[in-house]
Image (tube, rainbow, N blue to C red; front, side, top):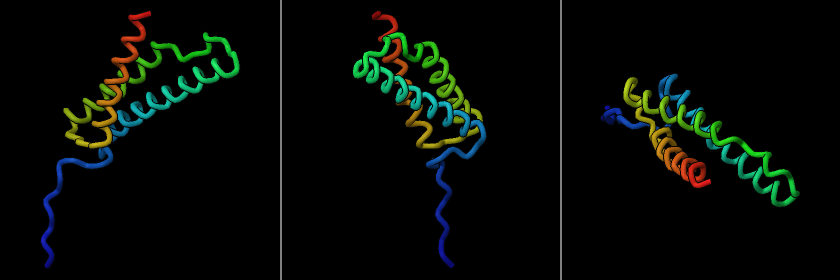
Length: 105
């Protein structure tokens, strides 16, 4: 009989509902960044009004909720998803960029 490998603590995708909610909110934050980039490009390329932008508060709410839900999934449910953890780290870096952009004017 073949030996079974021990179950790894880390998984590629989330395994709990809370983990999927966190992963989804992190994905929504990434989608918002793509929309923002497209709007910035369109305002420069087509002369659209600069006010046609996603407000920074929307970024902060969506991204922070994704990070919090992901952290809860890791701490409470022991959902060690490599993709979720990596995306949460990248989102924290992006939140830092949003904070710098907001406070610098």
